[in-house]
Image (cartoon, rainbow, N blue to C red):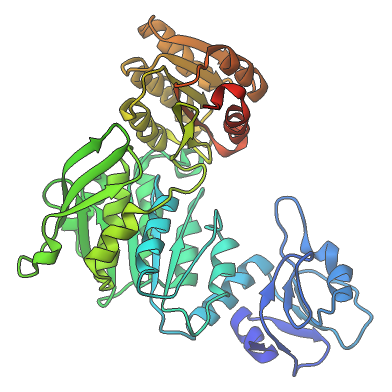
Length: 468
């Protein structure tokens, strides 16, 4: 619940029309779902401008509207608040609301594994607490504020994934969310078009800690070279590390792929006086070794918030991986690794490890599309990935897009045993997949979001060959 005066204070706006005494239950930006009694913020997005739907929201009973440009509203009972930027105002109001609560916020970022790690943390903490999280891909300057605006007194913890594709994004989200715990998964070649280098990626991701102090904690992957360098720097907050070797305080060891399908590893913690934290066996419904790191980050968060270790282990064992993010599903007598949501060189390499590890008596088929937003290094990074593919145990490579064709050429040059099929679009890839795929094969499908690779996964799952 917000009063007009609270909204004006939070967003530094001006009431240009209507009553000053109105109250709103919550905040919305979608004219299709906004309800009577809510504040409508007219946000301008890449496709739609909320200002174009003012009449629609009024027809739905909305009586308080926020705009950043002049609008003509004849009804004097409609309160209109004018500010400089409605998108920024959404974040300002979310910060105001977040600071009403002492509820701890966990925010996480990194170049790969963010969503899976967030969902693992949520699964673990939900064993003991009422947890609010951002759903799906709501990890940007719109999604994070909208999630925080759902914060209620009954919530015990908030878990927020924070994403970026340009300098300043993470710092802004940190300002809005004010996390007490920041989780860093890894740093690699992502969004290089605007972040330029991996050092630029680190600089941007590290701004998640901008508003953290002595009572706050950063949980980071000590096996990551760029992140581990931060351990020895002076910081106003505490650092807890995880990894598979020293100097990580929390270590995974004896990592094994069980039955060609499941991961098993031991977790050892820093507190020798607590035997329950030593030598615990963790099992995951994945053979992607990279998921050890995601699970370790979540494990540390669980211990930090005093979730019983037995509950942490159970939550990880029963964890179902999010659709399109390394999700392994039965494909007839074989497997589909559905990693179609997005791609960068870091996540591509990690996904390849999964395909190379998974047990199959058929072929290993990789359907790979363009990796976007890599700037001047784009072609070189696609060629590098081709070199990695050529050195692996792949049987078939199908590429989609002009950049992914560079992977194909590299593989054709270096490994004549791999059958290679360069395609210009999804439809062509589906045709080749129909020809080469047999029931029992293991297939990995991956590419950047705009490449629509989920259509290939859906096509394959619907194929008669994919049946048992």
